[in-house]
Length: 294
Ligand SMILES: [Zn+2]
Image 1 (cartoon, helix red, strand yellow):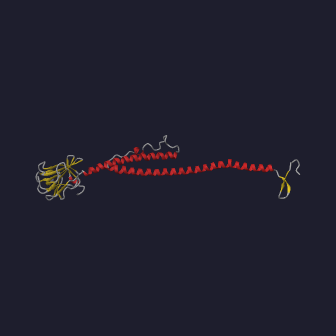
Image 2 (image 1 turned 60 degrees about the horizontal axis):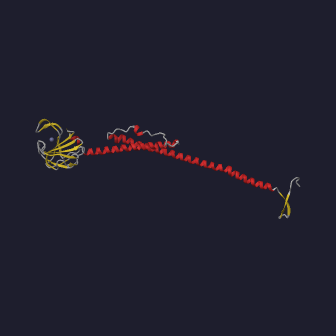
Image 3 (image 1 turned 180 degrees about the vertical axis):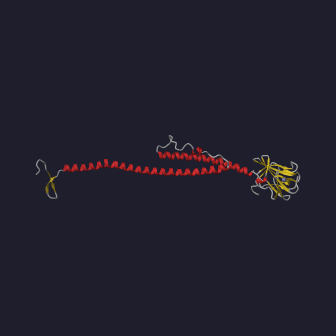
């Protein structure tokens, strides 16, 4: 028997006898304690752990995002390199052959690179990306403007090229060149302002470039039946000693159009074409203008 301690008994139907009731308050307390421990574990231990896991996850995502942005930054720098190549090609080739001034480096680079303004992200890498995007945008605009200007100049040039005398106007042998010669009509030391091409009477004479018929007839003694074509850009060509005309004054002609036929009119010793190229009012050597035969 335990002294000073109240002992309680209960009937056990299995053993068919009374047995001592063992301290039930301990069991109750124990059960509550266990629950308390579990609750404490879940409320104080697992909650911060969950947050921790979340934080670890966020850190991983942030790192991945950073790596991704860094990669994009690298790709953007590659894009800038490609754009710089296009720009250099423009500078050294297109702008050069069309006699255009080079675009200055300060204009090309612009003032946006690395500038931190209010709209800039606070994260340094993102600020760098945004700065580079602004720089690329600027460079694209500069290049676009350059190409637009170059294209306009090239179109004007190609228009001009069509108006510069470039073909031998008649099929035949060149018998007399440009310069001083012993002239059958004017004697020794006469300046021959054109070239003479021998061709049978009636051989087609072609316009050596695009232009407008300036004269078509016999406006001056010596040249006989003649045609003058005004090509613009300071160029005029003259075709003399013709037998027939195929055009009238004011008519537009293209390079290669048949404007008349060779003959022996005016001061001429035999069937030939006298051909002149006049640049800004000065008679020049037509030989320098034969870029293609027909
Ligand atoms: Zn001549």
